[in-house]
Length: 234
Length: 240
Image (cartoon, rainbow over all chains, first blue to last red; front, side, top):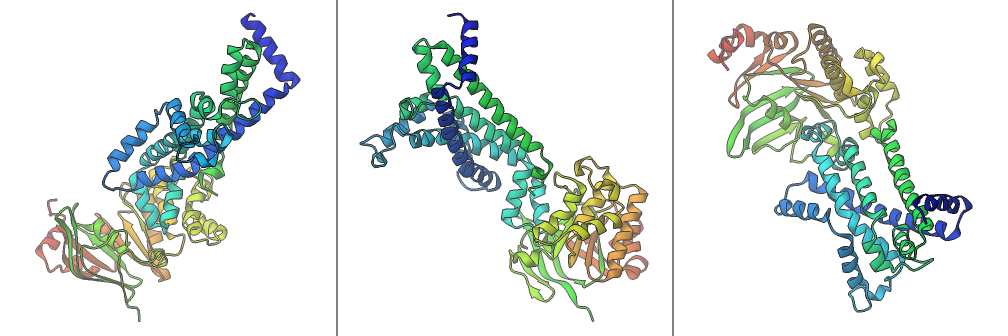
């Protein structure tokens, strides 16, 4: 099969609504969306807290966080696998080869990216602003909120980096999800499988969808950043 | 009869073992404009940060409207005092967003107040402009308007007219005087401009290397200073 023939067949599959494809897209969004939400809920406050506080061991913590930004997904997958396997400390949850296991693994991969880049973004805001916000009557929580809005470019970059780091990863999703059809098969693992089986049209279609999803989410978040009322947190 | 807004007794501030401020006794009277003058590094900005409750004093006692302040003070008390910094930073948004910000922090209705401030400060034309794209004079006016937005009981001004053109200086001085005339807000003004201190202040305090070397009403301070260093400063002869 030629490259161009694969593209034509892929377009046909997308347009005719191949059911398996849509199931895989849905699960991908569910797993990646949940993992990103969890990493944002935990990572943004942690990044803000590290940026705004000084304590013994902070430098070491920042080094660990930055190291975590380069964590190989397959290593995270292996660790989560061992924790969730029947004899592992969390084996009782019976999550292995289910979407929750994939969400946990992807949230762990995204967390250092979200926390680290949020921290860097807040540290890039003029340090005097914090004092001036307090002088205007801001409580500690209001100061943090205002700094996050000021550092929204960095926070946005953190979310996009987190999203980019997990939507396309294969290693962890494959290890803890098992790539089970209809249950844990997501776009990245499906592409690997279909390519191995010689189903290039389907693999290319899924690759196109993956790129489209990445583009769509990036465009959505960047569009949100440009909304004027998001700037002032109203 | 109005009392003291602040009473400072034996207040010192030490950074890394270096004493930067030492005030044996200083009162700020309610409703007055107190000008703080002195060369760079004399502790003026440190004094303002203490009055704004942004940092604790290393020793001594600050009483605010008869209430002894333990650091950190409660939020509602801290919100009575606002400051225009030497290098103010506006939040990223429009001029209107900036003026509304202190009111939003306090969950206060802000539409009428913000429109009133825009008119008072000659900023109507710039209401929807990005605050980060203003000229120096406009920027400073917005910073002052923002500090006044939530009707502070005390307004602290750290060189609010430094680097401004005469028009902006006159405008800001006019606002400071109108706030004084309204009588509800006590103002403490740091300035390097002795003429400005003479024009605006009810009383003047002179700091030198962290110490208060003279404090008195404006006329006596300029016409009949007790300390020879104050006299030199007033004559413009003090070498910083």
